[in-house]
Length: 150
Image (cartoon, helix red, strand yellow):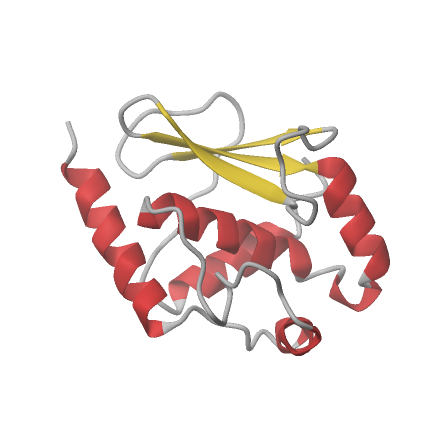
């Protein structure tokens, strides 16, 4: 919805830098190669870790559904007003990267870090927070694997 709107072009730019093109569609989830559904729920489930703003999970043989927790995202944005325009883009990029890699893992630094630091937030403001080289490799490898599934 509107909460995610400003994040889409930022997420698209982040992925464009690593040679991945995102196409955004509204409405019912489409099936097809490397398709990821993004939905919003009002509040995080009990099972979510305390700092999670969103989650990714496999649905069916090749689908990935990303769930964004509205309550957590709003709370996060209230606490990081300088990030209003960019934070959602980085949250989307983080979850999309998980979906593309197809592996449950985090990195020591960068966009796929489990918990962003104050320096990471500063880097976001200037669009400098990036994927690590191994993240980029795993994203491309994951997309190839997912595209080859029937």
